[in-house]
Length: 423
Ligand code: AMP
Ligand code: GLY
Image (cartoon, rainbow, N blue to C red; front, side, top):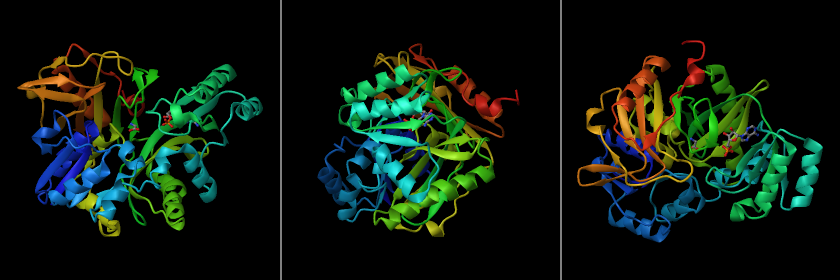
């Protein structure tokens, strides 16, 4: 089969790596790909915002499956165009992608289906939002409704901080994404990520994962796209996974189907494990990055079979096998990330790394001759597998030590919650 994979990050390098292990893969195209994906397939400079152009590419190249990595093309409706052209695609329709694209949309579905989530109010003007704030007090969470590249959420410790966040939204700090604002109860507990492949009706759960969103050790500093992840996350016991599936993921899938807008693709539930049980923080409609990198190190089954079943409504016929190991990914980012950072710095030492249990995925790199150059904020993901979290972590950090990149940094404590009490 010929496959087109859309995206350019570490998630997409990991997806390319796992797809390339399939005996059924005839040819892989990655649009646009990065300095790592070119070794596994052909990087193509397609404009993914031009949906007609992508559909034409699929027809011209006999593409049998399209896998969409990031959220932006999903929210823009690329899958609707591809399905209209008869191309099987992993990813939700434009409407179903609103589960990621609009927090108010998700909250309405939670209300409709009784999905446990933070209590909330939804506002399109400052004055009623400030009134609501007075009645709720702090701590409280202020969210721009639309996609804001992870920057639209303020967990406000004080009322003043919440007011400043509200004013920023309504002053246009997030453009259209902030025209509507959700104010919600601050949930307390440990966070976890649960992913499900969905074909509209059936779901297949992946092992639970946990990521580290803050830039610095000890979960300090600014929010990022994710500085590391591991799976399975011990906080998610089998009973909690079961409960989250029954109370959160399955009702969402049923609700979307009942509305006549079934969800297909990857449903990513960001959960808070509260004293009352798992509650939904947010849905995303794609694999998490860098959770995906760790999860794919645990997958024994053929990813192409699984994704094809997702795209063609055949998930009830598959049951993937996972290794009984742990996998952990450490993100190497350019110094300064998530603020301003330098590009084109030289990365060395990559040739010395790589074994059955350790893989380096490229997240933001490009090649110039034999050189690998940094080309983004999050630049590399070192992913390792082990019989315990501690073993996976040791292997990952040993590999990090072999990378020669003075312009990068990483967190040194990925997996600390899982290690607490075992050190
Ligand atoms: P999001 O962009 O929705 O993933 O939010 C980013 C981060 O903000 C989450 O990973 C949580 O750490 C935090 N957060 C979001 N909503 C809440 C909430 N209702 N209560 C506590 N923390 C939250
Ligand atoms: N790592 C979280 C995300 O991909 O949104």
